[in-house]
Image 1: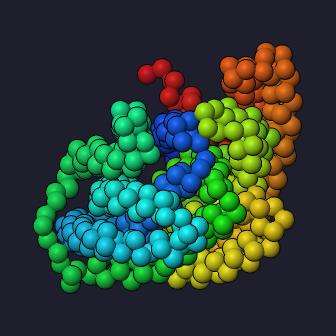
Image 2: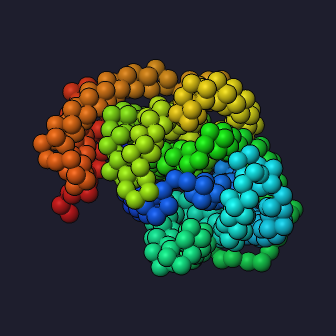
Length: 530
């Protein structure tokens, strides 16, 4: 009986510790998102949505895709499970040798990519739909791409350092480093905008990326990690990472190709549509980046170590815990966004060159995207679970299938809903991805607690629906009561969100949703008198 009590106590302590870490990382990511939102507001105010902004978005897309395909794929997805397994088995020297080898290989690869892109980018843009017939837009896009590609090397180095810190279970510095990136971009733009226009944003991205990398370096030194100019291609870990990497690169490449496909479709609809889709996507990713990314980032090293030790039942328990916590946060976020999409977009972007029509279009697109918040959060955790199990082929097959789904839904829905059709297509494709990955993981390692997840989700969905209706009613009432100006809009949104959260928490208690207890336990621990 005592052993059972001790086991229950340990499980509760583990849940509280996990939730506590998620909350701290979430706060850092929230600060990152707030400064990122300020960056986007400045962009919208100065430039609005036009051919120049479309050129900028397309130009930044290319270096960002390379970073996600190479740095994020090899390091975040393939490197962490292999590196964490060495740490879990006490092989620290082998772990450090593996890390240095991959760092040096990636530096060489990124330098070569920068040189190749500088030479070939004019030819690429000459055949891109939407750019090939517009010489001014194409010339601007070429210049912006060349400037921003200078940041690719430091994007890769930042991803390397972040992956190492996450493997050492130091999650806060990487989560906070994006705040530094955003602040530096904002400062550069404010200083250079009048003289250089939209080019100031490209310069800001280069300076911000270098600053982000330099910010992270001292934290890595504290982990007793030392960089060495060493490449050992015979290291067994290098082979393991490479075997995992190629399917992961193709998998993430397929996912990113969906993003590129959407932008090209939007480019073909008309001027400014790509930028509007980008604004809506940014707001959609706000709760995903705060909650789902925080949970999946923290859970990844843990399940990687559990997989290395063949602790499958512990891995499934971690998966269930992460999934329920993610859904507890994302279901109300999804319903809240649908409820308040128009006033949120109006408050954040409707000023300067960003018009009333832009606000309406962005809000509609955002509402369709919000339908995919929960499945996207689940896909993040499911993919990382497969990667922890050193299975990168299954996510690849699902990702490739999603490309065909994206093309199919885009071609149909764009006829009826224009750019909003691309958002609805995205939600449908992400939902299909989630269902396929969940069923395939269940087939691979056995039951995942699907009944518990479904029962929990139904209760959370009920609470979230009531919360969303209340939030909409509260906003309309308070907004009409205060005024029609921006300050009245700000207060009406803030007050309605706070009241809606109170309603949601109260309903969680009434419906006995267990995740709310973990949050309260963390708060009690933080304020407990010593």
